[in-house]
Image (cartoon, rainbow, N blue to C red; front, side, top):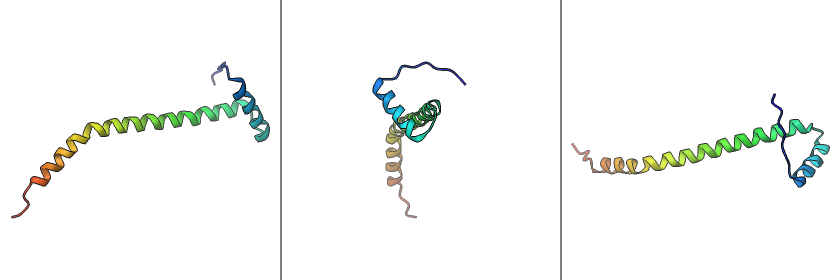
Length: 76
């Protein structure tokens, strides 16, 4: 494990302490779980942004291919 020193806004710290006293969870565990949750959230946003970008890249090609298929005469 790594040791990290950080500054937390007073309001956030007080709110966190109130919650911790109610749920009976160590501060360290609570902060680790919060960071893990936020990391997962950020990863999803990164994937979403990447998928949107890649979708836009293939959009024009997909439309072009569909038009080509529409022009094919399938009658024998």
